[in-house]
Amino acid sequence: MEQKPKITVVGSINMDLVTITSQVPKTGETLFGDQFYMNPGGKGANQAVAAARLGGRVKLIGCVGNDSFGKDILQHLQEQGVDVSNVEPVTHMTATASIIVANQDNSIIVVPGANNNVTAAFVESKRDIIADSDILILQLEIPLEGVQKAIEIAKENGVKVILNPAPIQNLPSQVIQDVDYITPNEHEYLLLKEESNEETFAEKLIITKGSKGVSIVEEGKEIIIPAYKMNVVDTTGAGDSFNGGLAIALSKGLDLKDACKYGNAVAALSTTKLGAQTGMPTSEEVESFIVNQGRLD
Image (cartoon, rainbow, N blue to C red):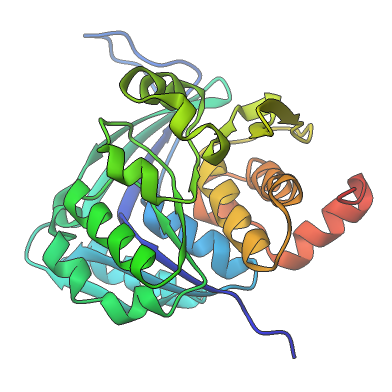
C-alpha cells in the first residue's frame, strides 16, 4: 500500500463570513447583497483541508478561540480528515475573515484573534510533529516568530518547506534562505522583490498568476505553466488549493514543473464551487480532471 504523504501545516484558522454581491460598496455606501454564508477558513486550515482531500496524512498546528466558532471549526476539520490534535483552544476569540465576492473576484479583511497565539514558544512545543513531516506548509497569517521557529525546526530535521507569503510583509533574509519554495501571487511577488535581492531566491519562486497560470525559474529562465480554463464561480481559496496540491505532488516525487501542473488542476477545480474549503477537490476528482484535460506531460 502506498504510504500517505505526511504534511504538516502551521498556520491560521478562521471563520469566513462571506457576502456575495454584484458590486463592492464605495466608502459610505450601503448596498443590498445577494447571499451570505459562513464557512471555516484561514490559510492554514484551507491548505490543510486541500492536502487532506488529496490523500495526505495532514496535521494542523494552530489555535482557535474557546467559542462556538472554534468548536464548529474543529469538528469540521476532523470531518475533512485533518488531524487537529495539535490545535489548541485559547481564551481569545476565533479569527474571522470578512470576504466580499463580486465580479468573479474577492476582497478580504482578517481579524487575527486566536491566531496571534501561534508564537515561537507554541510552535516549539510541537517540534516533534514538524520533525516527523515530509513537507511543512506555512503562511503569514500567524506571528512571524512562529513562522521562523517552524522553519528552523524543519531545516534542522531535513523537512522541505513551502512558504506562502500571504499576507505579504517584510521577511528576514534568513527566512528566504531557509525555505525550499516560496509561492506568492503577482502582487505579493512585487512587494517581496522590492524588499529582497531576487537573485538569492529566484529558483525558489513559484508565482501564482490566476488565469495566467504559474511562473517558475529553471536554469535562469522563466517558465510559464498555463492555468486550466474553467467556468469560475468563486476564486476564494484557489491559492490555498494550489499550495495543498503542490505539497502533495512534491511529496510524491513529482518534479517542480509537474507538481505545479497538478497544483493548477487542484486550484482550477476549486474555483467551480462557492467557498474556500467547500470547493476543494478530492484526489479522484483531480486525477479524472487531468486525464480528461490532458496528462501531465
